[in-house]
Image (cartoon, rainbow, N blue to C red):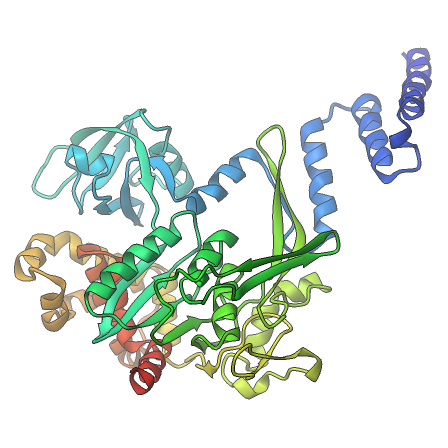
Length: 525
């Protein structure tokens, strides 16, 4: 064996040298050739068996980690999961659900979806999937989702537990494409003022948005609150399409530019539905990427006012590079710039500091005091129409700062939320009183005016907290009570109707929304 290795090693190295000679483009001094030689040698000479595919994946990840924070590698399965929310649909059974103590509670079947078609109802509990028990066995959420999802046209047998029936009900569901909506809420918040909340920028966002605007205009909307709080971004084209709705023809929305990517401009067409009326955009520290493109364009053209806290600061453009096995590299190729020339991306020279940026902002007091933020003159820009001062350097700084209310949610409230006690108590209440609630409250307006969180529900909340390890503190409980009641009422409304009704309740206590209403009511014509 020793003599055999002595023969093989020079032979392989000779082959490598010959390959380099035959390919002038890949000379032995090039970094790429060096990488190829290393991988070839490890795969053919290493003492033990190696997973060559994983070896290459790790090498790719290692290279990308040396670049910026957003260049990344994803395997084929990760690519599929990552694309589902942006593409606007996935394939499955079509239910909104929540996990409560290892039990899958159906909040609502998707209207017109596979589950609704076979008679599955809100309040049902899925106990088995294809005769495999998923309730009470501590199965992970990922495993449950994997069993429920599947290609369009395939069948899944569900064992359902339903109030009023002692035996398990069985439903055969044919999986289908399930739409994913990117607009959480759209309603008339005050006379003449609409409110639209976009959760992400996906393939269907623009269509959803224009449909919502059409309906709101029929109800008399003249001015708009566009809520992008917590919106982490999505497709560039979706952001451009949304910004187009507000701007005049040929007004620049955003441009991209990189070392090897020439400047590329995206301009408004002048056919938008919202070129008149007053606009307020809501942002916070979690608003990123596409959210910053939209808010930056509206601010730079003096088209509307931005309210909230400085946005995240993600302005790097990733180009997806598909690999033969279905995996993908997302490689940063350019930066986003607002119409005034501001770079949206915050510095990332120190990646550890970049990852801790939001924590650092909080510690420095930026979320509490606007005057804690200082920009050098080199980052000063002016808006395109009114010449107002705005700043670059990462993220969009709002025109009106809304501090983070650190007193609003005390420790007891935060611990209850973190342990799932608030949502679990609300779901249990819905489960036990659904028929009573739907009979008593024929519509949301009736519910909103008359429903009060009951002492029994609050007691259930406290007991859930105790079971989850959240020790009862009477003083903190009393302090948190108004917010707990509001949140639980909103959760119950969501489960009886839609997410839209959740925000209709919660927004009445949202300081950014309150400021937006104040601005619009003072300036509306």
